[in-house]
Length: 109
Length: 113
Image (cartoon, rainbow over all chains, first blue to last red; front, side):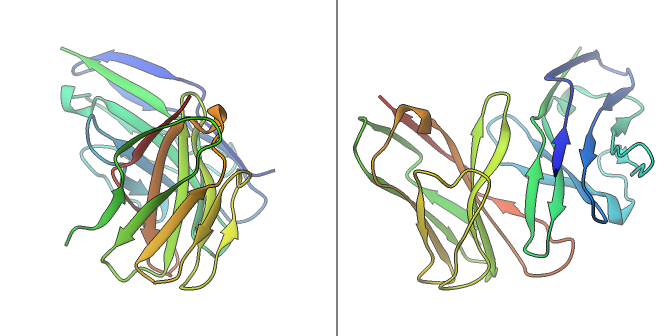
């Protein structure tokens, strides 16, 4: 079965602390994974994709096929990182995405 | 460019009423999608389209119909609304290429009483 699991509904950290938002997936094919973010009163937008191996706003995510994970990390959280984060898995060749349940990141001052 | 726009922004319906949500994009994207967002469930794909005149079912298509008569528009219809369809609906679009990014609309908040 194709599935994306984000085990934490809410992650609350203090400013400057490290952050790790967990994402696990289940997919029989070659996975393409994404992180999308939704800031307050803004629309959902792409944060990063595994194939680009990029760092965006200090966030990185490494695909671990052995553990079927794509965790999102940032060494020092900022208050402006507070948002809802969704992990997504692309399936098939029509661009369809399967989203996880989402994790709300709250960065306290 | 306006990107992806959705009409209306908010709507309240009574059970059994019908309505159509309109999604429009000005980026010449081939692919378009309708999702619903519910607390604790993330975003779930309702229907999608890979081109003008084509539509296909997603994860949760029951109770919804769609049409894509023009490339830039993707309509989502509720023929007989039910309280279970109370949700926030998002439209998205993307280019037809590998590893494509989906661009999202601002959402429509629908309440069915």
